[in-house]
Length: 306
Ligand code: BEZ
Ligand code: FE
Image (cartoon, rainbow, N blue to C red; front, side, top):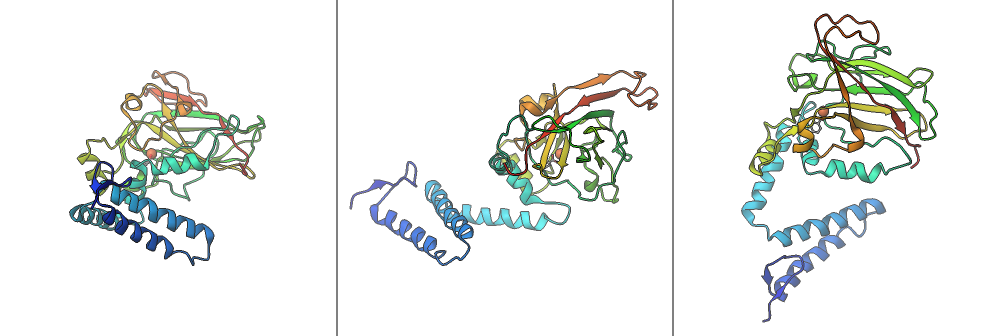
């Protein structure tokens, strides 16, 4: 019996009989989806089957490893609830979230780039007026953020809805505390000229939740859970593509070290100008001896159908 290196078993020699057994199983499982009525679902299930089996055969998965994978997924399920989403974290640290975003937000003219959504968005954050404060008691250095919302032809987008959310200087989002606070998040609407402004907090680096199976996995592969400092935005407006993105802090060393969820894009790195204490604020807010910062983020929305 001659032996062969099967393409799906990199570097491992298996007999043609063994390769045929493995391939027959793949073909049988793929065919089991043949009667799926929804063509897209059929494509997804058959392609998933092929890729999954190729992975199993390429790495020659052992039964112990298969058991460990099942235990990992079980632990991810157990720690997941309405506030903790371990499967989103898993997708994020594997780069699957960013790849899906890249596929679905292709570059269009000068439209602002999208990045990872993360698990900490809340749909009903309080509304603030233009120039209002999103902190809601969250600790951190005050930061004035302003900009415009336009389409790719440069037209302002009056009334665009701007959701913003961020971690406090301890590195936690409000939902990670147990007291039901709402802090470090709000929504506001662009004015008649597409302009917006608000007070937020100067972003600081923080780790993604790493006390669960995803954190353990990162540790065992010597990867850090820390994210580059950022401030989240989601901008929605009629007939324009919804933008989910962040701005990152120019000069943050974590950008060079690496963002744990691969979210950084050069176009999203913005200057956060430090303002020494007593520098007059744009809206006359009195900050006493507190230093603050200011940043500008002009958002360009792509048309909805691209
Ligand atoms: C975040 O930026 O909020 C985030 C993104 C991915 C995973 C965890 C947190
Ligand atoms: Fe975040």
